[in-house]
Amino acid sequence: MRIDLHTHSTASDGTDAPGEVVEAAAAAGLDVVALTDHDTTAGWAQATDAALAHGVALVRGAEISARSGGISVHVLSYLHDPAHAALLAELDRTRDARTSRARRMVDLIAEDYPITWEDVLAQTVEGTTIGRPHIADALVAAGLSPDRSAAFATILATNTPYYVPHYAPDAVAAVRGIRAAGGVPVFAHPGADGRGRVVADAVIEEMAEAGLAGLEVFHRDHDERQRARLEDLARTLGLFVTGSSDYHGAGKPNRLGENTTAPTVLEQIEEQGQLDVIR
Image (cartoon, rainbow, N blue to C red; front, side, top):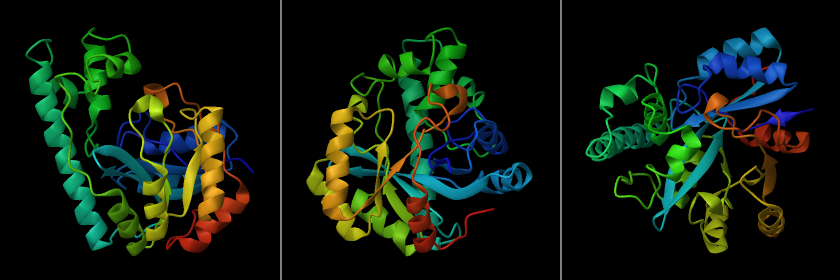
């Protein structure tokens, strides 16, 4: 059984519609795929229809933005109640902050480059959770950068005068919030130090005490050293490990199924989550 538990659609910063992500998962030979857009469940309904049509099992999820000591943390939430009031309010606050932050960044970039907020909106669909990838796409469309990766490495890098942080809940609070909503929290790419600073093991221990279920160990942003360290930490803390693609369509080079999760881990997620896997 081939299981990929981390993908994105046009509901956040992927380039495929939710149904297209599921269709692509079927074409890639996956048996199970999770849709985990940033801070939103807007793609769930379309993905569910596609999963039933294409015979792919669907794990409904989201990638929750969080922070710890100024370091960005992403927590994957699987099978949570999408109508849970407290989690909904937190996601709404984070999405609003993402939008305000993106507008401010565009204003700063526009002082030096010919780009407008309308250029960024042209890279989205209705309901999209707007983020830096959409600014990157606007820069590419304007001929100011060759691709998303280059835009993130230059104009959108965190050490430039254009970078603006946004509100996100504390990582430990995010784990507690996911559990309160009946979800199963997994720390996404916790050792991806090529993206910037990563949290210390002590923070992961605090998250585990708050209810963290697993670590996304097998990810293209982790080298063998990080994978070994994280596997050892997961064993110590009694966490399961997952493997995922972090697929974004044409937005990133990541390919569906390039890292996968064991069926026994999916069983644990199903046992702990409030929702059923769509089959």
